[in-house]
Amino acid sequence: MIAQGGPRPAPGTLNHLFFDAMAAYDRPNAMNVRVAAGQWQGISHRDTERRVRQLSFGLLELGFRPGDRLALISENRPEWALTDWACLAARLADVPLYPSLPAEQLVHPLNDSGAVAVFVSGETHGAKIAAIRAQCPALQHVITFSASLCTGADLTLAEVEARGAAVDTPERAAKWKRDALAVGPNELATLIYTSGTTGLPKGVMLSHDNIYSNVQASMQVLPLHIGEEVALSFLPLCHIFERMGDYLYWAMGAAIHYVDSFDTVPIALQEARPTFAMSVPRLYEKMYARAFENALASGAVKKRIFFWARAVGERWADAVLAGNRPHGPLAWQYALARKLVFSKITARTGGRIRFFVSGGAPLSPDINKFFFAAGLTILEGYGLTETSPVIGVNSPTAFRIGTIGKPINGVEVMIASDGEVLTRGPHVMQGYWNRADATAEAIDSEGWFHTGDIGVLEDGFLRITDRKKDIIVTAGGKNIAPQNIENGFKTNKYVSQAVMIGDKRKYPIVLIVPEFAALERWAALHNVLWSERTQLLQMPTIQKKMEKEIAEECERMKLASFETPKKVGLLVNDFTVDRGELTPTLKVKRRVIDKTYAALIDSLYAGNGE
Image (cartoon, rainbow, N blue to C red):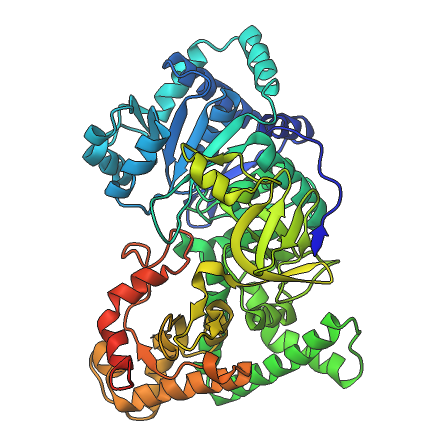
């Protein structure tokens, strides 16, 4: 079975997108950075074009030539985007790297790409480069975004711009624009190194048209108000999801507010009051957990009101999603629920959000339905770095919770005989840098890219059921798709993170990181005495409590016997990128979890014939 979006967008380049936006908009706040509490400083479209042009000239004055690769290590900020646009205009392919990576993990992508320069945001990343520079012989320059030179840096961005300003003339500016617009759609725009759960990262080669076609197709699906939107940029720009999103923001003339830390997103939502934003499920999971935590901490009456409103909202959402218009008692009950409960949740997002977009990993349908009832629509989409990234996304007119929507224009999707999702179209990468073997393995002779995900098509909607490599095959030969089960567990107010284990074992188990605020409150109410969290998790009362919660979730999800975890292991620490348990895009590295917690896992299987 094949599902196909509408006609593919005409080929184009990111440089055309840049200059088309310049011609269409003249906002004083095209880009915005937070300079103090409640204060955001804007950069206009006109200043953006001037700075991009002069930065392009400065890079050429340093001796860089079309086709060179320049790395970029920084948190989200306007300088990231200015540098990206300047590289594109000068026909330099940038190589964005995750700022969370430790120094030793930067060596491979820098050397593999042959990066001749690296931009760093400041002292922290400059010090990383200084520590490994001797191992990266191709590096010629280290350029910092900070106002003065930091450790490891040779130049500041301001100095590079000044070099460009010194040779900026009207004649040269006109030629610069002509040359930038002459770049071909198939020319390499960027190399993005995958944050895969196994093996060394591979450089994904994305052309101008790979990303341009994705932007154009996404604009035709999402309910955008051209020239009026206010957007947050807080997912790492080195990831193609946010990167494409920022190009989308630029193309539609949005005021982009750059947020340099995931932890400050709640503040930015209140201050910038965006009309829409893109995120991975972790943000929505945290918002969901916070809503429950606030309800549990608000006293008996408010707690009852919250759970009453949630139940009303669920009935209302079920009716609306089935195509009905609620009326009578349900309609007025829902109106009251919005006033008493849901309005407070929407207020925490700034009060102007029309929709969120979710991607990067599966979003729990229960969480999505909760926010839908609260008046916050989350349009879940799906894609990979290799697909620029969007393959499909829900829209207000084609919205089905639990799916990732229909393929966008120009995109074909097919389900292989083993259930793997295949895709073909202008969004599929050119290949892996220096890895013809891996490219041939990923893209077959008919142009189908093999995603590694398992899915099904339902009336044109694509439902992703799991990662092919994540499928657990028990010793009895039963196949278990763990992601949706784990997402189900994470809707429980006592669960922060969950990972299923059981490959080649007789039965599955689950490792749980509790939502400690809720669990500690429960412990206090039941007179459980403890001094440290490690001690708390070792108490039989707590173990039984968590086992009961997991058992109830299994029953709610109607899991088959072979899918149901037989044991529950409790962990005191959240999984982190720093410890290597998560990829920079927050996907769980199951093999690392299996190895790190081997002793606990073995103890859970001990005495059961394993």
